Structures are given as structure tokens and as C-alpha cells.
Length: 367
Image (cartoon, rainbow, N blue to C red):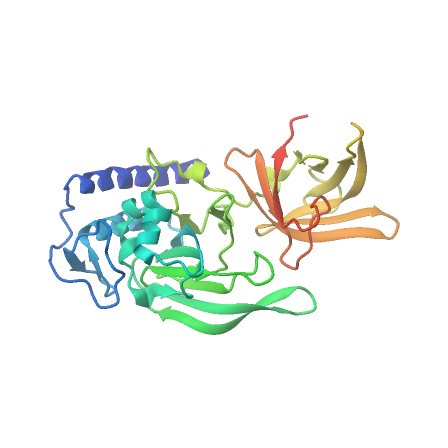
């Protein structure tokens, strides 16, 4: 089933690449109306390569035909995967005090994606949310009657972790349009100051807190019960060559995917075994440490593990009176050989993190 999903999406992405290539050579889709009207008030200045022949989009914003063609093909990609609630792209970090206009900044920062998805430069200022600096995302709802709310939030301590609390509504529409959202963080990188709530006409609903690590340029993709992503990540649609969606996506692993694996960094290794007698957990866990002046590993922690949504839950003991537990957001690369792990959302770190470390990558060991 997963391979079928990937094949359908890959075909849609390939058609997107070919269609955009034709558009660049002067090709035009037969179903798009033509027009030559000025951009609406508030539209970002089109100072790089965006034409002025604009048409009226159903939601109200006027886009050029090239932008509408890219949006239409992006919609086709979402329609190929019914479980997708919306599409999103990570566009990079924009510094406070940046003097370049947003349109210029997009072209400089993500030139391939901006050229392939020209609507990014045409999103009106009223749909640029959260200020003018921070981690920037583009959100594209599915076509049709899609409701979207973007809230500014803060994270409040509950005595048992932290929970988001809405402070301000930045955007709300029953016929949502593409938006650009600036996101910043409070004390930790897994505490973004915005939440995005989307309900589409299929009845699917999703509340998403954007979480991205700049080193990888990939964000956490929530999945359904069949491990299919609920968000279409189009961050790399503008890359040269045939799109490879399976190669682009880092996803949260499953219990089955982590069972009977060993993950290593410089002086630590973590073994996750299948089963072990506790029906509430996927299996047993052991964490070993090797000191710099020796080749032998010593068992430091043992316990149980399981996946909880996008988090690896570890319940560990280091002996009498010493224990360690936490739920850590994790992503696994498409090859299955790299595991990216972050500190828990309550600030707890895995035992193999150095001081002041908030994330790291572990490599799959075959030894």
C-alpha cells in the first residue's frame, strides 16, 4: 500500500516538473482563463520574473497564470493522496532587520522553489502572517471548502509538561487561501509560537505546530494510522531533476521500523529490541556507553520503549534509585539509516545528549 501511494505521488510530481518546464517555454494550460489586470492592492512587489497577466482565483486572490498552473498541479498532487490535509513548505529563516523585500528574499533563499512555485511571490500581504522574521513556512490548503485558522500561541506550564495556549488569531477563513507564516520559538525549538488548524471538505482535521531543524531543512510530518503523511511537503519541488518524494521525506518511525535495531553516536549506543513481556510497550531498550580510553561498552540504562505519535518513549533504569523517562520527537530518513532525535517537549534530554545539546542524529549499526 505504501509503495502504491508513493508511485501515485511520484507520477503527480513528475507531471508537475514537466508542466512547469512547458510553462517556462511558453506553454499554457487549456483550462486557465486569460486576463491582463493589475495586481491587487497589498500584493508583494513583483520585482523578479513574475508577469502581470493575472486571473481571478476562486478564493479571491489574483494570481498570474504561471502561479495558477503551479497551484493547480500542487492541488493534483494532494488529490492523488486523499489523506493529505494540506501542503506546506519550509522556506528558511529570515533575520530580523532584513532589508531585502520578501519577494527578493525568497528568490535569493529558495531560488529553485520560487521559480517552480511562482505563487510564493504573489501571496498578498494580508496573507503574510506572524511578522516579518523567523522560520518561514508556506501553507497551501486543499482546494474546495477548506477552513483554516492560524493562531499565535504561548506555551504554559501545567505542572506535568507544557501545553499551548492561544493568544491571538492571525488568520481565519472558511475558504482558506495559501498563506506565508513566520514562526519563532520560546525557550525550546519544539515550542513554536504559532499553531495551524485546518479542516477540509473531506472532514479531515489537523492541528499542526511547525517543527523544523535548519540543519536538515525537514519538518516533522504527522501521519495517519497507516503511516501515511497528512501534510504534503513541497519544500523541494523546485529542485533540478525528477522529484523523489520518498527521498525527500523524513518521517516519524513506527514500532515495527525500530524493532531490533541499534543506533550509535560517538560514545553511546541504543539497542531497541522487539517484545519483552510488557504489553504496553513495543520492546526492551538498553543504552551502552564507551569511555574514551577503552573499547569496551558498559550498560548504563535498561528498560522499555515504544513510539507515541512522533515521539520515542523511553522508560529506563540505571539501578537502584536511579531512573530516566521521556518522550523524544524522532524522524527517520528514507534509507532507514539515520535517526534524528530531539529533546522532549518538556525539556528532558535523552541520557546520551551532551550538555546544552537539543538534538542529534544517530546512525544505524549493523554490528
